[in-house]
Length: 143
Image (cartoon, rainbow, N blue to C red):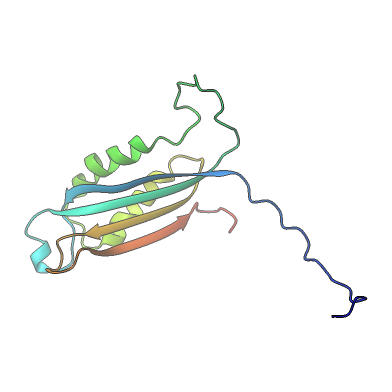
C-alpha cells in the first residue's frame, strides 16, 4: 500500500429528512372485484395493506399529548377500506382499487408516498394469495 496515496472521500450526503411510515396491514374487506366471469358472481375477500410516508417535522416527546392533530390517523384508512370500497360496485381490476386507495391517502396533504398492496386469498386453489402492489408519490412532488 502506498503511504503517500491520496484518498478522496465522497462528499457527505444530505441527511434524509425525518419521516414517519404509517401502515395498516391485513385489513380484509368483502368487495366485488375481478376480471374473470367466476369473479363477477358476488363479492370476494380482498386483503389490503397500506403504507403511507409523511414528513415528520416534530418529535412526540410529551407523554400526555392526547390529540390526533399532529399524526397521520390510520383509522381513516381503515374506515375507507371497510366502508367505501364495497360501495364502488364491481371493479374489474385490482389496480383500479389500489389507485382509489392511493388517491384517498393523498387527501391528507402531509402524505408524500403511498404503497398499496391488494391480495385475493381465494382466487386460486392451493395458493395462499395472489395480488398486486403499487407505489405512488404525491402528484407533482419532486422525485
